[in-house]
Each structure stands twice: as C-alpha cells, then as structure tokens.
Image 1 (cartoon, rainbow, N blue to C red):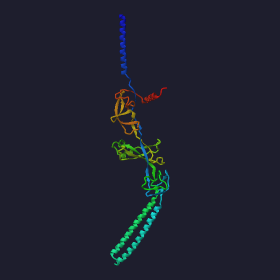
Image 2 (tube, rainbow, N blue to C red):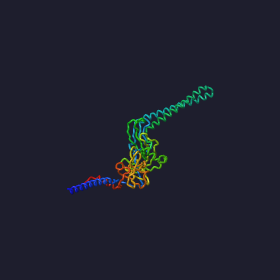
Image 3 (cartoon, helix red, strand yellow):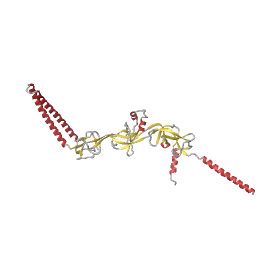
Image 4 (cartoon, one colour):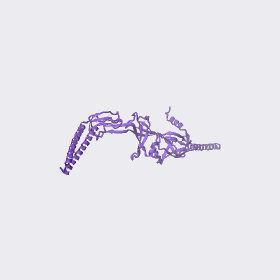
Length: 391
C-alpha cells in the first residue's frame, strides 16, 4: 500500500510539474509574439514631376456681343452660326426705309438753313453799307447781325442732325468688330432688333488664341511667391508652361503660359482667378468649353513619399521612421503645397536613406512599436494573392 501511495504521489507531482511547465511555456510563447510584417521604403532623392490639375473654363481671346445701335426689323442675316468672319464683314442688315427718310429730311433742313444764312448774309451786307452812310441806326444794324448769327446757328444744328441721321443709317448695317467665329443667332429675318434687347444678335469670338480660366487658393498663391521672397510678376514669369486636358481626357497638343493672376481673392471661395493663354490656330478650342489646366512641378533630388505613409495630428503631418532597432518613431515632416493627389514632396523632417513605414499607418502602427520590415512590392503581391478567391 505504501508503495502504491508513493507511486500515486509521484505521478501527482509530475502532473503538477507538467502543468506548471505548460503554463510557463504558454506565457513564454505569448511574450515572444513575432513582430508584424510592415512594408517599409527607403527615402531616396529622385527627379519628379508632380502634375497638379485645376478645373478650367475656356473663353475666346475676345467674346464680343453684337448688338444693334438703332432699333429696326432684321431684313437680312448675312452669316451663319459657326462661320468664321473677318473684321468689318457685314453680319446683319436692318430695315433702312425710315433711316433713309430721316437722312433726306435732315439734308433738306440743311439746305433750308443754308438758304436762310445766305439771305441773312445779303441783308447784313446791305445794312452795313447803309450804316456807313448813317442812313440806318446802329441798333438796326446790330439786329441784322444777330439774325445772321441765328441763321448760322440753325445751319450748324441742321448739319449735326444730318450727321446723326447718316450715322443711324450706317448703323442699320451691322458689321463684325473683329476676326472671329459667329456664335448662336437667336433672331432671324423679320425679328425686331433693339439696343435694349436682352439677347445680342450674336457673339463673335476671336478663337485664334483662347484663355483658360482656373483658380488658385490663397495657400497656392503664397507658395508661388515663396511667402514674400519674390513678387507675383516674377513668379508668373518663371512659371513653367502648362498643358490643357480636354473634356474627353486627351491633352491639347500645344502648351500654354500663365498670363495673369487676379489681384483679388474671392471672399466666398478663398481663391483667386488665374488666366492661361493657349494658341488655337486650328480652332479646336471653342469659347465656353471646359477642361483642366495641368501645371507641372518638376523638382530635382526630391524626397518623394506616398501620401498613405503619412498621418495628421493637430494640424501637423507625421510619418513613422523605422530606426536601426526596427522600431517606428513618429516624426513630423513638412511638405510642398503642390502635390499630385498620391504623393508628397518632403521638404523637412526626412533625409536620404531614412526608412519609413508605408502601410498600417493610422491602423496597425503605434509610436515605439517594433516591426518586421518587408519589401513594399512583396507586401503588395501578398495582399493581391490574399484577395484572390480560393479555388
């Protein structure tokens, strides 16, 4: 019995020791959890072109509303919509009957006034002779001279009326003030045209060159002038050529140049209007169209990092720098204001050769955490493989 009892006691001791050993092993296993694999990239200088796009509205170099200067019915439309016209070409003719009559009436008034002047002049000459012989009084002679002056004034008035009537007649022929392309023609023959009409007769757009209007924020403008290091005129002069992405996604073959930046910032939008000039020799661009101005930002030896590798805290941007012990350290950085929506150009906080985490930012990583650095390309392949459905 004593022997059995001793054996049982020994088994119990061994079992307890095994349990303690198992618990100790589990604790040791939990304490030695492997570090998570996180994709890491090494920051290296490179040449980059971070193109920034801005929605733009296209307008002709000149968009001139054609309005009549007199009121009348349209008797002839000489052009068609979309037609290219030259400066001085006839566009519309208005009814000229009443204006011809007005010219004839004004001309008759001039002739009548001229006759009155001739008569008054003859009378004044005769009275002068009589006055020299003291046959009439000075008072009577002065009355005669006053009548002559009045007749001359009436003649001048009649001539001015004739000029006005002739100009009004000329206004019935509406011509193009510049070279360009005819826009919409809302009114045709028989319609009444008036200077006060809400709609113009048409619009002539000079599309040999076009302006692309877009907006820059106040922050963008400060970046252009280097926070006051250079003038806006100097900044515009040194800006690179810009491109225009058309509505169908294609790039316009000719480059443009930023011409002006408005001196006023809109209080509602916080942006300022900017105008870029593009040559349009083939008339591909039309006034009223839309597109996107593509502004290059070419830099040599730029430190380019993905935007997803950064996070914001209290209006400051950070990255996780991986030190020699493979621990991540939250590090503040400064970046260029202009970006392409995917990457940032770092100006402060990083140096060539630094390693930064490019995944798990904002989700897995915490400051001081130890990681197992992996290659970003391998991590991408593993993620794609994991997303494939099982066969």
